[in-house]
Image (cartoon, rainbow, N blue to C red; front, top):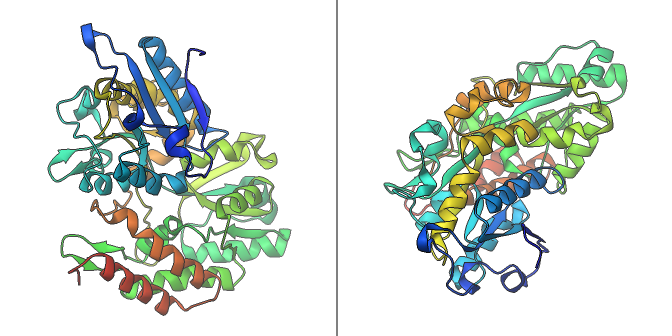
Length: 424
């Protein structure tokens, strides 16, 4: 068998547990007998195929060079499928990976279910005081640390400088200006002002925070998505679509949004640093200087963008914990994060990485770091990752005219109270 990383493209099939087997199906092997790591580490990477995945695969290959007796089995799992696939594999005791790249909100849920290995006192948390405080917050649950922060992000508004110049408009700083600018772009160029992704509730959060709202108040165990601020936020996004300032979709939102923006059919989109590399691949941005990025326009109360990012977590049932800890440490080291930032403009979670070459002079990182510093943290409760399903259902229905803002947030609130037993 060829040395180096074993790249496996994951099909959406139940054969995953057999064909991309995790540590439960491997014979007990590896460890660090005699001080040298060995055996297999199966890693589920949820990064974007075609851009991000190549960089992370190379990093994993570099880890293998440092530890020649360790074989990293690389599996790219579609982000939208990874959360449930990991839970199903861990619950069944068959097919779970040794290490998973998890969205920040998944960590407390997986930890609460008992699927993650505590990392306190392990090599995975080397130099843990170097992590940004807001990044580290998403890795902790019930007094223990269950993941290591790999990248942190937030959102901004991406805009086409040439279209803005042709339309004679400036970058909008408020939602009201966003609507006006979009109308002017349409009148003067015939292009749509904004592509508003309608099939992912994460894109709604900036508007919710901008009106002073939130999904829940974890401190008081209160559901807040259906209060007046929630209604106002839904009304704002519906008005952007109804007025023609924005176009939206009910399916394939990412592909439709990216292609429309990259081909110059729309002047703006809301997105994060994970989209920069793909955006540069578009016809409109072969000259990278044509891409502008600014803070998401503020609502009537505040300018608020959500804190996002990804952590690396180790499966509690791994049969090769030593190598898994070492792999997690390597992939989240300052040196590895600097390589990722240089090639993908993803923001490091280690303070020391921001002074390193490829990071300190990275224009995209330089823009998003202040945004991240002010980003709104989501509640780090086990159910956080489950709050998006009912919200996206109603968000899509509101944007496509199937329900009203009041009914949309009302139905979301009802679903939350059913999920969060005992919450007000």
